[in-house]
Amino acid sequence: MCGIVGIFGIPVASKYAYFGLYSLQHRGQESVGIAVFDGKCIREYKNLGLVSEVFDEKKLQELPGEIAIGHVRYSTTGSSTYQNVQPFCVKYAKKTIALAHNGNLVNAYNLRCELEEEGHIFQTTLDSEVIVHLIVKYLREGLVAAITKTMKRIRGAYSVLLLCDDVLVAFRDPWGFRPLAFGVLNGGYALASETCAFDLLGVEYLRDVAPGEVLVIDENGPKSYFPFERDPQPLSHCIFEFIYFARPDSLIYQKNVYTVRKNLGFNLYRECPLRADFVMPFPDSGTYAALGYSQASGIPLEFGVIRNHYIGRTFIQPSEKLRDLSVRMKLNPVREFIREKEVIVIDDSLVRGTTSKNRIRSIKLAGAKKIHFLISCPPLRYPCFFGIDFPQAKELIAAKHSVEEIRKFLDIDTLYYLSLEGLLDSVGDLRDKVCLACFTGNYPMEVDFSFRKDITEL
Ligand code: AMP
Image 1 (cartoon, rainbow, N blue to C red):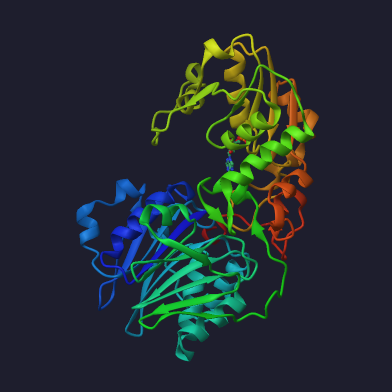
Image 2 (image 1 turned 90 degrees about the vertical axis):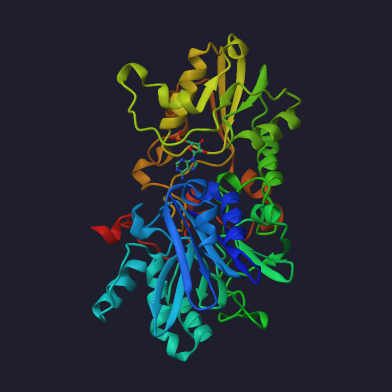
């Protein structure tokens, strides 16, 4: 998963991109980069690390210009190395081109093999690099035609920002997997994965870049192209953006994430009405569903575990004796509160089950009398090929085990997953426009189950 931001026609665009990326940091913490057109060519700076670690005032000043794109990365194809940091920049036929991509292509490997046979030389192991090679291959026909042709060859999830010298282009796959918002600011324009970036920048949200749209912004302003026939395939907005990924203060697919997460909690109560001393989330991911459950049930919401927000990377491996260290570093139970209590614990999802097992163990050690664990989405049984980092099915606990087996493994009194209907009800009118493949195995397009995120590195 990744976050992208684009700025057009705003002095010191790099600073706006920086603050935009700052708001999108939750979408990727491995690396960050900003590319700016300085009037002659595109310059960039990028590195591994967080936005605040990689950039400072001086580095931003060294990126002058009014047009910029930026990217924060959480790798889903290609490892986390310097060469794979985006934006991906190239020089071609006296043009400078930079690309920032959120999503995952399902046919990148085949396209890459085909392009390599034609003599293309790849610099990274990113699926995103294929997009640049194809655009460059068709560029003789003009930028819009090249992008249009490329979109017809790539399949999968892509919300892309492309700088080609002084032209900024945003384009989005026709399934609309990943979000991409468009807004105006002081006569200029901005694009971002989520509207929380706009709030910080003072950008007025206009609309989303539509699924299948190519939005070109140049000195004449924005212009849209629609290379696909309207509604050629059902929309497939990623529902996991609502469940876990996006920030609750964002609008994605024109819907507020906070509201949807609270609905998940309301529906959890409707389906699984329990009584207990209090409801508590595993913060932050379970917070808003827990709030919904508490409001629907009238059971008080308490914070039975406290999150440390300042965790960076740790280089010290906890010893056997300190095996709870990594769990406690992030979430520490409030013993005085939990001791002798019956608690309803809410989290957004269970992936491998290992983190939850440790977290549950720590509240048990704090003296909880009874633990009911509720998950605000159905069992995750199938891998995601569109940009959420879900492992192969064999690593997903619900792919191999029944709910009862998982309950026993977690050693708790109740385990309940929200139903698919409860999930769909929570997104209201988007119910027919979402991708549910990780729950149902019904993928909106053909996928290759042998895919691995290091496929281009083997
Ligand atoms: P686990 O118990 O190991 O399955 O971890 C569950 C926790 O991981 C939950 O709090 C989730 O919010 C969080 N999580 C959500 N999505 C992912 C993901 N793609 N990969 C890993 N952990 C995730």
